[in-house]
Image (cartoon, rainbow, N blue to C red; front, side):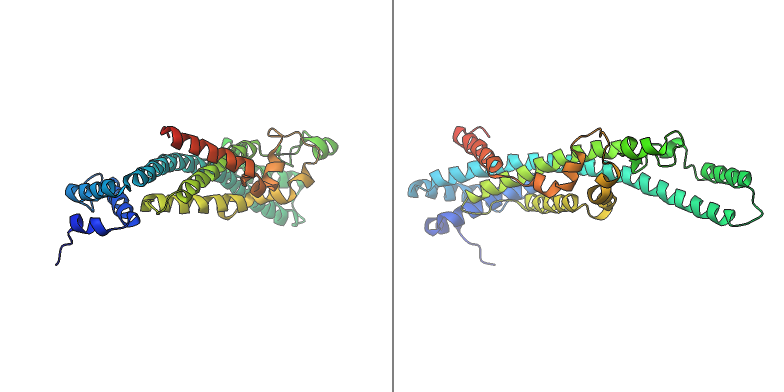
Length: 291
């Protein structure tokens, strides 16, 4: 197999090809913790020496600063992505409890309905059987406390119908709080994606390692899932589509909950002011060589 002499080839190589080799080598070393590389130390030196002679070293250094900036942004993005994943997981946990409790109550309701249709069953017997089933399926146990779409549960006998209808019914407070936290993490992730895209626009080559590209793809998919309330988050659509119908006069623990869940896509969009602010911060950091 013929070995290419990069020391000689570098003299006729254009600047983009030189940068591609240098950054691919850096990525390979980073991915393998220094165990593998594309270039030998001599080849790296030959390329950089030739860039100095041709006056291309200044541009390579500029792109290297962009590469370093992109690396720091990707680290921030990975942390933000993890925070968003954890928040979504907490939402999923609450929603799963709500769904399981609802399924158990539906089963009990059907069983009591069938029992009530039997003419020989007295009201006291039906009530006793209902309590027995609720205890059996642990519907009223500590396991399911707080797992309702709306608080308090509609079967609470301590609330008169007028009070319940007009002021008491409220979306699950844990859902409200966790959802708002999730929105904050989603917005941060959206900003990190924009920061990275802005840095890449300033670079003449795509120097992102495969790991970062996969992170970008996963982050975009995660944001899409959250914005559309899809998959495991579908139960949240009851608040988005019908929530205000049931809770018109409710005082929420998170006053902007309905506004946020109904306008989630718009909230997560970056306006011109947001983008300009992010661009200015990155430009300032690049100029000061501090990012």
